[in-house]
Structure formats: structure tokens, C-alpha cells
Length: 371
Image 1 (tube, helix red, strand yellow):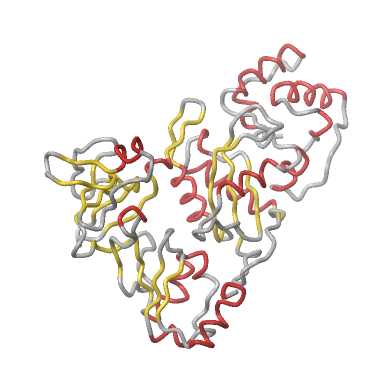
Image 2 (spheres, rainbow, N blue to C red):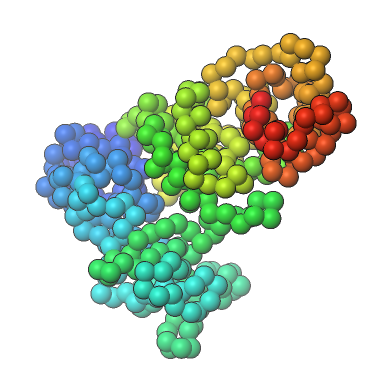
């Protein structure tokens, strides 16, 4: 298959023009594919990565494209992105494309520079979804004020002063966790920008089969573990305690407590869908398959520590009741937040600890004491 040796295939066929997702594009280096350095290297399907610009930007061949399938693929393009360019800039619209930036859920336009949902119009907009009339009505709408039919992309953008668009994530990246609405994209950007060792990151709201509550789980590929070669097997990797601490510290400094991921799961590479994007279903399965001990050890290089005193054993018994995890699967070094304690359940934990004799078990104290 071509993907088994994509660089070798490009070199053998002297390919000068190619269109790849960033997940595949990052496997290529200019030294391996000199023919591409003379042509056009289009990336699209997911957000362009800074590491690709660092390598390919000086060659002046990267074209950052954007467009949903429902609008016949191509809507905008940022040609010849320089190394100093922003990966989030998806360029200006094509001549045959109309565009509006609406407040999500409405047909009210945002002011220039404001963030809103990108809606596209023109002959390239599809007719709808086969046998899905409800979804078609929701996404393909006629706007009487503009006398035009548009496709609501669900993508958040900002129209910049030069007429280009900045891609900021998905409208449906907004999730609700224990009554708090939060932006998944903001979590990813905070960690990616604040921790040098993180190559790729995607965060999901998941519930582990052995735990009672939904939790934010950040899957990461670390630079120290990353390979430009396409991997045949997705593996769990340990996270150095310093990197894990740095990720939590960055989140703690920049994000409210309810937006801090409970788990950081390191992989040697992300599983990809048929569209060469991070496959959320496979990531969910990887998380569900983790044992309680694996959940605790993934974010730490510490060894299992059994309770050394009767008080520690009492604490673990109470903690086990709150998080719904067997006390046999909890050790003295466990991070209570990785076990499922959050800003709501910590109130119950503190109350039960007081009943057990831990008189100083205030919520604020427990929140600061991670293990």
C-alpha cells in the first residue's frame, strides 16, 4: 500500500502536487521528498500543525485548505503558508463561495473580528443528507434575510482584517460537565501551547466502566515518543511525572478547575479514522479497556504503594466508596482526581472523612491534597 511507505512512493513517482491531512503530512520531511519542494503541498481535513510549518514553511509550498464534504470539499485556502504563519489561519474564501459568520444557533451576524459559526453558500453547497430530512433541515437552511441557502458548518471562525478566516474549533466542542459548559478546544490549546513536550493532543469527555462520573480525558502524543513513520500498533506509553505535573500546572494556572483533565493518556500515535483524523471511538475504547491500576500509573512513574498506617487504610476505604472503585485498586500514592473525584464529589468525600474521624477534612484542604 502507498501509506506503508508514503515518502518512498512520492520519491519514486516524483510527485510534485499532493493533498494530505496533517496527520499524514507530518510523516514527510523535505529531504525525503525533494520533488514536493518544487510543487504544491495541500493540507486539509483537520487543523494544520505548527510542527509541519516549522519543517515545510521555509519551502513555501504548504497550502492550508479548508472545506466540509457537504460543501463539495474546498471553501477556503491559505496559499504558501510561511513558517511564521498561524496554523489556525485557513485563508480566504474561493471566488465561487459565499460566507457568513453567524452567532451559533441564529442567523444574526457577528461583528467583524467576533467569533461565530461559519456558514457557506453558493452552487457548491450540497442538497442535503440522504434519507435524513431532520438533519438536512438543521444544517442546510434558507436564510430569508439574504435570500440564500447556506450550509451551517458547525465550525467556529473569526474573520480577520485581511479577509482571511481563523479557525477556532467546533461549535459542538462545547460540552457540559456537571452543569458547567466548557470548550474542549480551549483545553487542548492551553496544554499544547504551555507544554513543550506535547506533540499532539485531543480531549474527550468519557466515563470509565469502573467509575461513576464522566471525566475529561486528554490523549497525548509526546515529542519524545513521536515518530514520523506510520505506526502499525497503537501503544500506551508512560508519562514522565515531570511532564504530567507540567500539564496539570499549566491547566491549573490558565483554566478553571472543572476544565482540568482527570487523566492524561499517552500513546505512541493516535488511531486514525478513514478520513485520517484522530478516531474518537478507538480512543474511547482504549480508555475503557484500562484497568484501575493502569489509570493510576499512566500519569506517574511512581510504584504502587500500599497504605502504611491504619488511618491511610481508613481514608482509602472512604475514597473507594465515593469513587466507586474497589479499595484493592487504590494505593497510597493514587491521585484522587484521576480516580474520579471532582468539584462535586469532593464535598461528599470531605463529609464522609469527617464522620470517620478526619476532623480537618475541609473541602479546600482535600482539593489541595491530590493523594
